[in-house]
Image (tube, rainbow, N blue to C red; front, side, top):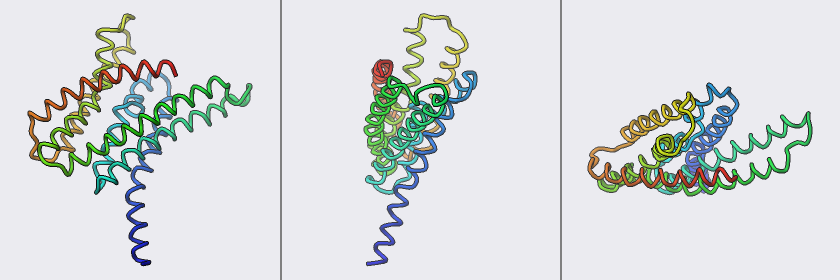
Length: 236
């Protein structure tokens, strides 16, 4: 009985520890990217504080889980802990910054942080479940299922970048300055890295036709969802 408890404890630690470390590190990196000067931040934010970056980490952690249950735990745990870490730092350090000049944190600012964290926690829950499931199917599923899952995962990772390009080309009406070019460059890099991630995670053989079909549909749906996300985020 004691040996069983020891083995169970070790199994639980192996299941939880990767997502714990990845989530906290991801949240801290995203917060740090907000602190640097804008000229540097425009390059660090896409790498550490974007849907692409968080999706890649959650997908990678889930992919190395041994069971479906552990993959789901890894996906949800990574994104939820990253969100809690990021907004915990925003809330606590904002209080510290404002403590010398006035109230710890204005009620309006605290309300905004609370609404944003609640919104992204819901996204982290559903996104983590989806990415955990996809990672498990890519690793353990049949050729057909793995190809579909890999295409869907690719679309989820590239949706934000495709929306950014669409926004600049069809919606943006301001001057095309360095900020716009930086956004386009970051989107192009994300597309390239998503292809690299898909290549590294794929388990041969993979049906290229099925992958491309599912990736096309997923990318379109993901880009459309990012349009909705941006609209909601502007109201928080």
